[in-house]
Image (cartoon, rainbow, N blue to C red):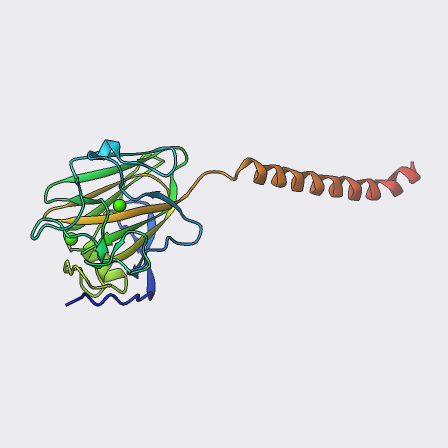
Amino acid sequence: MKPRLLALTATVAALLVAGSANAAMTISFSELDWSINAGETEITQFQGGPTLGAIAFDGPGFSLSGTAQLFTGSVVGVSAAPAMPSSASVYNGSTGRDGTQYLSIQGGQTATLTIGGAGLSEISLYVGSLDTYNTLSFHYVDGTSGPAINGQTVADMTIVNQANGNQQSGNTNGRLTLTFDKPINGVTLGSSQNAFEISELAGISAAVPEPASWALFIAGFGATGAALRAQRRQRLVPVRLRT
Ligand SMILES: [Ca+2]
Ligand SMILES: [Ca+2]
């Protein structure tokens, strides 16, 4: 029977505040949603390889390290290609899943994405067959780490009812988005059992505004300064007349 892949797009965001670490993030999950979020730029679809260090990135400043593997297709009990909406560019019509290479973190393995420059203020991951034992931990530009979350956290904080590893349901296959109150420069993905599958990463840079924006910003300051000087001159006029 062909998997029934409904393009459910309901999204619920929740705020997670870590008790120990002085950081907060919001978590949202969008079912079978291949489209990246507004403002995001794609980071990678895990093409290239076959090792983590040889994966191609869409922009500069990113690298992947760790022991996780790259898969194409599914192996029962080992790794399941994430379920996809038919609109996804990586959709395989005969399986209803990602037909291209994806990241698969097997039991006991990790993959760390390192982010250069100013880091990211948001990251989204297209995840497959989310399980309670899939983990994400975050490293901040200021040198601190945490809070870490897992599949159960996602289930508790979003529309995901159960992170039970279902290989077709929109509950466990879709876009997981995390936004941060301070920029991250790394994410470590782990899984204590098979497996944590990810098709795609995207994010929003925490970089300062582009030079063009800065030029406008400075021009704005200049205009404000000129207006203030004009006001001051006007105020100064009567004083001058008196002396
Ligand atoms: Ca891919
Ligand atoms: Ca899984």
